[in-house]
Image (tube, one colour):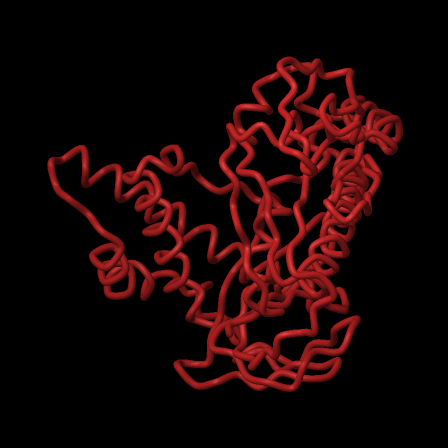
Length: 346
């Protein structure tokens, strides 16, 4: 199957500047394509990424000498147009809003390849096409990939790529397990095991508020404001990494040790519309949990069963099938009338 990996790069100051130049070229190409797309559409034409890419390579790119600087990978403009085409495709399908112009310092990224040839990776060093050798903080599997995406989070650069690997199913300890996601307990399993919710955002909220206040009080366009912005972004990235680590450990345990996993189809977007619970629900990462569960099921050889979102799992006794008529949000445990069986409502 196709697996993906990402890790942090260990770059010096010169390499960081070189990466920023690549990201700037990718951003310029994307913004030029977006502006030209809107201009052609207003004139009654129907543009596409292939038309824009051809015109840019033949008429615009030859005049921009700074794009052809020594060591700059010329494939980044191609992937910038591909990203623009995917953004418009999602817009036409109603999956996202109209594409916006990219801003410097926000979601800086670019993609490179070796002209169709496989790129060898492995160990703590990797040779990027037309760029140079770069080091990583952790060892990479010895394999090959078709393309590599490099992006920046806060003041750190990361590398991400996909590779093919033959995965073997693991030995399962349980045949079936039901998973009930919640805010108080992140996950409650039908086997009796519970995973507490660390609430990383809530625990670090005071520190985030102080950093945000410091950032807002700095003078605009100053070096101190830029430093405060990086510090605030690092705090947000740390919380996101802690949340992903918690979900990774939970989903890996489920997929490695259970043959069938039953989860409910949660309406996450609907729950986030509740202003009183939105922060707590967003801190749980329900969508990320489902995303990781789907690809790890293929990796470890288990089956995912999605239960209907309107199925009253919290009101139904798993021992006898008795269903409680009404259940308030504050009721966490109740006792079934017909079998005297204790039921946890999640």
